[in-house]
Image 1 (cartoon, one colour):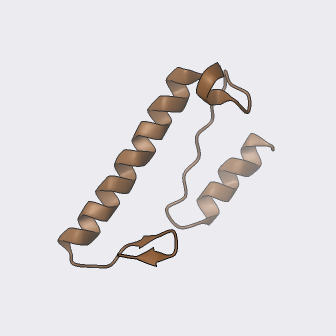
Image 2: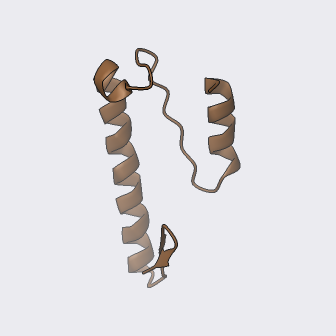
Image 3: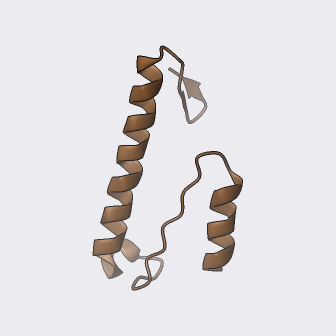
Length: 68
């Protein structure tokens, strides 16, 4: 897929994100480990922060179709 299209799509959805690994292929976890794993770490931390904030506010959080 076109990276510009993928970036655009990530902005069209609520809380979407996009990670471009310029030194990687479709196996970026091997080809571009530095960018890939730093991006995955940022994504996971953002998810944890989002669920933690929702829990603090006593809101329910939608995790893949399940509300907790």
